[in-house]
Image (cartoon, rainbow, N blue to C red; front, side, top):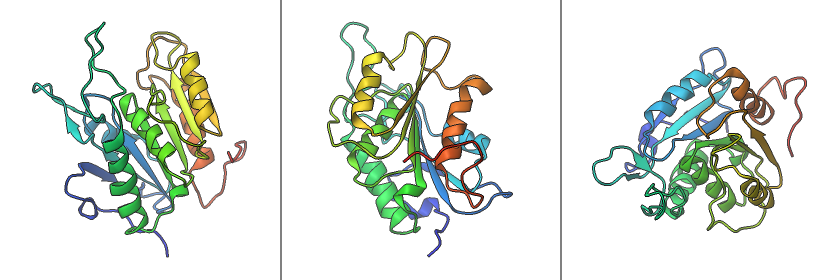
Length: 240
């Protein structure tokens, strides 16, 4: 059975998300890319990202974090709790991801994309920024099935996640300084995933890609892992 296009009404009412269909020029329902925003953001910027990516034969789903920030700060988060760094006073990225994993793995992937829409786990990829990237990593590590891949922009491995090595390929990107993607965090990710590709940007900080050069490793990763009727593009290598 060929997959069908998911609708927002297919998902539980507690899931706040936008579905971006494949571009009209490449309309096959071959892949799903789930986009996870960072701490304190909403789904709206990642809905725009899904449209801007314009990936062939790929449906994008921009999912919003399940918990609102306290104190009327606006925005949402992926953690099980709100934790503050006692030194800096900033909110911690790693606040446990049990609820987020249940949302992504069960409510989105298993109950709807697989059971209702007919996709296979290998046809799904996760893209996350910051805390959203940590939720993506935690989800991939919780699954026995291989996903199409995970792209982590500035998201290290959650400390609580200690499972068998995942067969899902991982691309992790971060700045050259003032970054969560340190040498030790890369080593931790390499110990958790059978394939880890680390790309260090030539600038400080872990913000979203700011140039074509910074976006290029992500697009190459998509080209290798997203299924296409034309097959793997010339010059790329299938990962695993």
